[in-house]
Image (cartoon, rainbow over all chains, first blue to last red; front, side):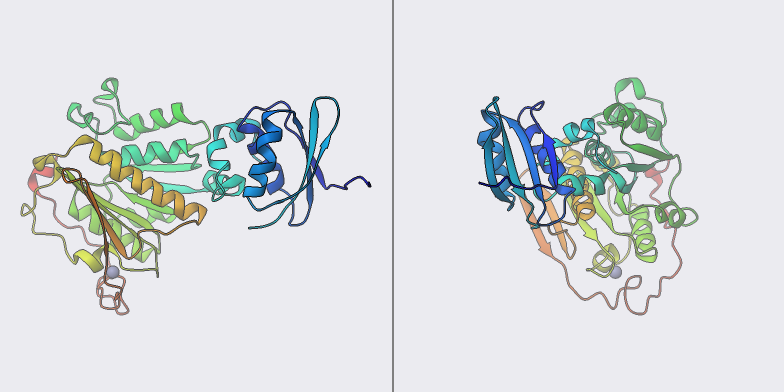
Length: 81
Length: 268
Ligand SMILES: [Zn+2]
């Protein structure tokens, strides 16, 4: 499967809930409609919550990739409300 | 300007909200709100706006902190008695949030100074406790095309409404003229339950915040009343027709500001 191309990336592995989502959301707000943000996050709580919160805001979750080092990368396409 | 990491953390509960986000928080940080009266209403309004990160808060008040203020004016403390209210308020806000610039005006608002005072601000909060000031603020905001929140509190009751130019009646549309002086008790003579300022002043802050972020419905065209004893809120629809109003109507007869006389006991 081809790698997803993205327009910006953000690392939220240094944050805990709810700042994980908040930091990702702030980065996504800086993008244009249709652009893709790659969000690197820790396994556990962020993987549970960040994709769900992104969907709730109306954005399109493209893929959650296991980096096999205890972190995941979530690809989110920005959809303007 | 991008938010700093510290700001992202400080305002995280705002940024999470769909209606606010980083965009709304930036609007708050750029906004300028003037609070006239640092008393029962102005104190909680100023504190919630400061905590929310409203970037510039102006406070106008000529008085000094009195021991009898402390039962409701929570921006001032016991050690502030005798201090100018604007100074005491600024000190509290500076402690709360370094993102806020506080402009202080140690003055009574009058027909001479009010238009210039409000010109620089995006939203005005009427936190005064007397009718002459309320009509003055209304007329000045109509003339300068500034949105403002009116509120009044007495005993166990409170009320508020919001004026936005072109979007509904002004305070004078509804209340016409100040009552004859000494005909109506002010909160100084009648008393007021301290938490009433907290309820109504916080609602004024809420209106300012919603106006700034551009979300939700404001109390334009409605008067919200609150009775603490019966624990009832009423939202009263106000007449839509503004064209006969002497100040905001089509042919205004009030084109100069009026300094109404204040009741004797309200003068210091
Ligand atoms: Zn009017």
